[in-house]
Image (cartoon, rainbow, N blue to C red; front, top):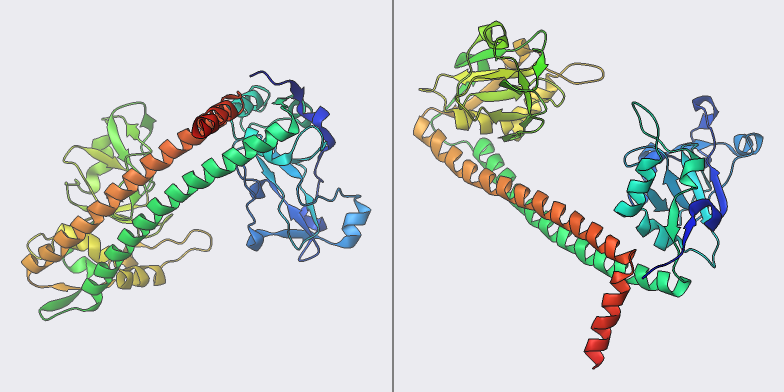
Length: 413
């Protein structure tokens, strides 16, 4: 089905950028300034706690353009460039920033909801991408944005397409919410058992400081030069709470190993700990292969006759120990902990290593279920996102309403 295409600007009664508002012109209250961070991919992100405002006097002096419920805002900055949202009803008077373009459509040519869905389609995003500029940070000019072709079926057809998409996207969102709820329940079960183990300690538990039974290997100084292939480089970004993430996958030259790993050779099962950004993420090394560590990671090698590696990982993940670590954290902008302070953190653990392993085994099972559910959840999210794109592709080629008509005719036959 072929619909006429019209350039975006020609479909608007208002097509203008927001206002240039310098920091010195902002105030603690007044007329709210909506920014690119409020523009999601088809949705408005309120972020009221980060809101900025200008006074009525500044509004008048700068001759600002007020925006209203039902207006579309398009971000001319990433990510992605050209994303759109519809301004909802709020209790504020509002303006928007200069990197947002305000769209107020001609009512007899385009409804905001139709454009908002179209702005999420690959057809639109690819066209916008072709019109962007900028070496380091992509953006699209208002002039080029106005040149983007928009399909314009009759208004009744637009409304039918929006109604079908509303239902389809609502069903997809419910599927996401159900999966996320199951994942949340699994995490809560894990946290409950973890809390139980380390708060309801039984007989035979002993007290120590971390350094008493653990060798610390602190990888400070420069990070080895990265290469396209070679030895695996593990950075703080790879160390997640309870598991080692493969991405980002980075490498260093093999000849970096001897120079960099002189402080100690890591072994499979060693506990990895991030000293900042983020502080106190804990996992274990998952390989016997040679690897290289970047800064902000400490490797802990416990005396394995006294302290089980798996148990140590969960001990460091527990809320009481995490709290102690964060209380010792320092730094004005990024909180971190010095190795000298970390070593002094008091810990308690069963003297019987078989009891340690029993607790660790149960936690391993629960943690494995969570990891499996997270993998499934991410795959489902990816599949559902692809489904959305497929539905949008059909919607703006005319296939969606055609197939909807056929199914309705079949139901009444």
